[in-house]
Image (cartoon, rainbow, N blue to C red):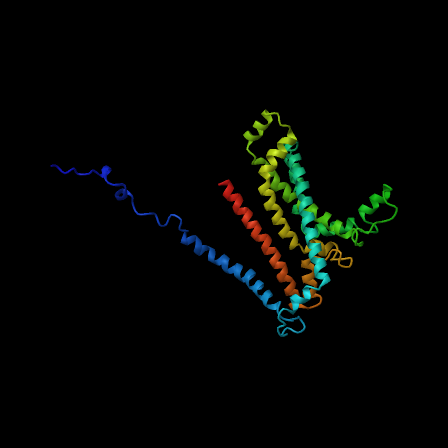
Length: 315
């Protein structure tokens, strides 16, 4: 009886399988070490002020009396009955939400217009991006000059066209101050949405659009059923990013209206600034800042989840 000698190709599969690659999903240690300086800077610039703000929110610290003792939850209990804080929070939500919605709609319209009619005229696209290049403070003072009650460009034009009988206080009236602030803010943010949406439109697969046209779909049907579907992810990410930006927008409301008249345009960032550097109530301002930080963290987490879902869906 002969014993067959198994050739290497006839050996069991378990003998041919080598050891698992343990480092397959292991991150590069060199890259990790290179990221440490940035993490250290972020910890110093962001983490320490955040922790310090939480600590100050439980004290009655002021710039006049820095050594005030702790007060526990008293600052947060005061916030529950602070009508100015409620007004500032409401104004911030209106200012951010309406600005993002209006800028997104106008940016979408301009992007569709540029894609269909102005794709060959690059100078037009450059001009449409100009408001984004202008510093926010400069834009705010530009609108402040145009919206002045006496001698403002807008009132002069409206009076000349007999559309109004007397000058309108666009930035001095509680009725018109918030719409004026939102209008100026939207003007500075339209280019951002225009750029994002235009890039998204160029990423729409051409064969899908051609197939829709071959089936008899018109231009607006193609936009509604196909292009907007591909733009949903970029639009949501851009909108969340701009909501976070508007929550932190200090230059526009401060330079244009200063939070007034009264508290009609007071936002959270202006309220924190006034509490800390006008009234010197640093501890109470820190409590407002903590609530503000929690809201921003919620938006930031939602932003990260959307980015991960989009990157996972595209991979």
